[in-house]
Amino acid sequence: MPYEFDEILETIRMTEVEHFDIRTVTLGISLRDCHDRNIEVTKQKIYDKIMKYGKNHVKYAREIEAKYGISIANKRISITPVSIPFDPFHAEEFIEIAKILDKAAEEIGIDYLAGYSALVQKGMTNGERELIQSIPYALASTKRVCSSVNIASTKAGINMDAILMMAEAIKKTAELTKDRDSIGCAKLVVFANAVEDNPFVAGAFHGVSEPEVTLNVGISGPGVVLDAIKEAGYCDTQGLAEVIKKTIFKITRAGELIGRKVAEKHGVPFGIVDVSLAPTPAEGDSIADILMAMGLEDVGGPGTTAALAMLNDSVKKAGLMASGVVGGMSGAFIPVSEDMGMIRAVENGNLTIEKLEAMTAVCSVGLDMIAVPGDTTASTIAGIIADEAAIGVINDKTTAVRIIPAYGKKEGESVDYGGLLGKAPIMSVKRISCEKFIGRGGRIPAPMRSLTN
Image (cartoon, rainbow, N blue to C red; front, side):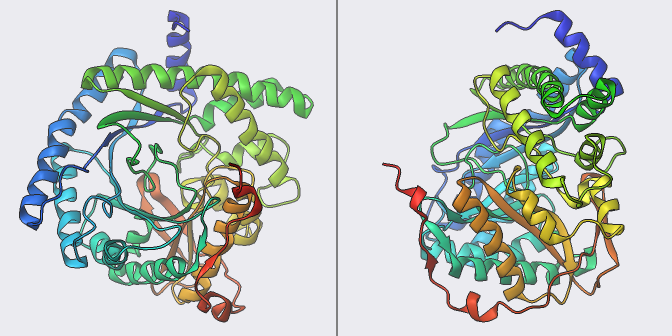
């Protein structure tokens, strides 16, 4: 479907007035040809490969911004999950790899590079175990590197041993970055059913079935949807869904245009459009505000899950109508610290972790950017991850946990990272122990719906 000039003009208006932006253009780069038995040679290969494809990434994105008048908030890079090409290495060598990734990201001028990752839903190789053990130290010694580990899938079940390892890694990361309010945990995601073409950090990685290099785009626009709902006035829920779909259709079209133009600049294949409503801490750029405009008094009360389900479904349907290359997560994100409406709901006592967990059953991703007391035990964090993984596995959808056990902090306090990471109020966690259950280890078998062959 060709792009009309009127579409571009309308998108520029949305950019200027309604907080619309292209949230990220993410360049995915394969590192599968970068291994060498010598770690120094490996590091040089990694650096050279990333610089070869990524050195002009920021420049090209800015040229497209200037040409079309549409803001691209973030320019980022994702790489092959590090544990795959570099499986023979030990933890100390993985940390050295993280540092060279950080150096490349700094020189390119991007805020984050993602893919310090492992896929261990069915079991772990020795290298994957070493990588997981290295994660706290890698995140503590770098600024731009993001890490993720997939611990479950509908096809494989839930790796409980990996969940406990990740809970311990989260606790250690919080301790090692305590001088910065445990910010390392904000760069670490635990997934179920992770997707290979996700352009959003911290969970992005360049999947093993992806080409040598590709360009994926993640769009946003909660403010645009919020204004459309307000302008629509009173209508029934079916009419409201149509308002949301028409709005998302427009911003998806704009997102694909920008993504394709950046890919053309690079001379690389265009991958996918991730049609996700991703909030920011800015006023008017909130998923919570959308839900309240739909008729809720506040997020967390009765009706919240139903309203979010309708919003998420409308986003997906409109995206699929607007583009033939929709991928990634594509839905509505609910990161607490990055959404002023969510922050207010927590501070008002209306939004709890338990309600957030219910909401994640019907939207994209999962428990995202939630801060909990620093003395929360590893087994409790493991239980939270296992619960979220179960929702993903049983419903055959991506879920995730990005949790911050803020070192030395208690319920009622907060951590403030500024920028897109925002401010996270410390949320209450149930103190009922699940240690014996988590301690059983092993793998929860895949559900019936996994047998689809």
